[in-house]
Length: 321
Image (cartoon, rainbow, N blue to C red; front, top):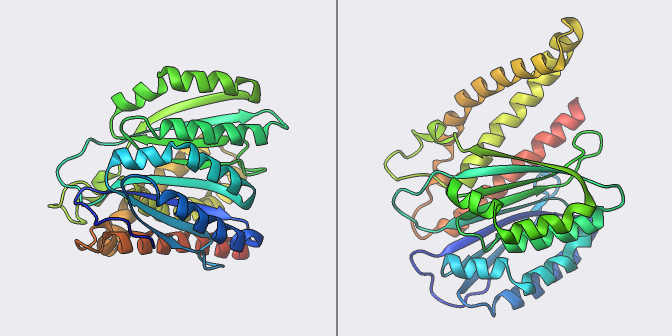
């Protein structure tokens, strides 16, 4: 941890989850130390905390960086220095890159978030160039007003052939402003020779109703925490239903078309998830609403614990099924 100044009341945290190739864990640790020296020179930087992986349960690095203001955090996210550091780490990384921008100790009602999901099919042999382009557009969108975070998922052979990017903004107006901006359009034109097709879908968050009983008097919960808990319940429901019901019964026994089988599975998944999420939210109140003065430590530990549960479920399902 590096401390540069006392934390103000409305500081902003950047929470990053990233996966490092096991053989590069020591190299990444040294790289992160060098990055700490770089970020320490940025105006408004307060502190950085790292939680290294603990295989086989926790496989992601969790990095929390605090800044005095949103403008300071955006300045770092969009800086040439950060892009240079990320480019240097690219050979060490594998899988997703997940970034959340969270305002610490915020109060009052904030706009409901809205997301866009962008799937892109990249031309064979152009993957490395496309990943370099992704780093450039990530830097540009980090300066967009209202950005609350983004997630980048690479393809999974045999399962998901497209690159998936999920951007989250505080309002649809800010999201549309970024999607229609000349800066983004210029970057999209730049990527055209690398891609075969790309599709975008806008979706407003509807998870708040599942968290009404967590701490109802304290205002809206951080969306990234709601997302993590929804995924914690949704993944096992979808997997187990598909394994025990969808494939053997709906697909093979009854011979239903895939579109109908998937629709029925979604009905069951949404229903069960809506029942399970309020239950798990009530047990994660310590993380959803950390005590004042302990936000950074609790946010980091909670995110790491849930990430470990994700990894444990995948590990168990791979072994048993």
